[in-house]
Length: 142
Image (cartoon, rainbow, N blue to C red):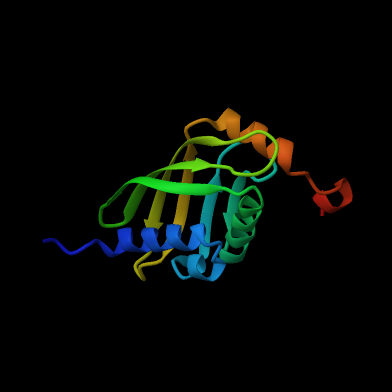
């Protein structure tokens, strides 16, 4: 019997915390200076810088009842690749697709970069535009 990879264990702990809307549990896995890339052409897309910005993004996903069910996890020395089914339970329209995330770990064993890849980016773009509003222009252009 082999010892589980600590990076895979960290991602599993992240998903457990995510399912429970436990932001502190998610923060335990993430480096303070994390960069999390969200693809798309919608108000939630772009690179999130720092654990608090990532936590704010994940809180927004929680408002739409986003769920994740890991399907595949594999690790090497620096990375974990996860493939999971991600879907919404609330809001106008729906998202239900596969996602691939590339998680990079720093030497301290914390996740410092995540690149999120969508199996159906058009579905995600349409859902976000239907359910999230941009801030008014004066606040958006600050």
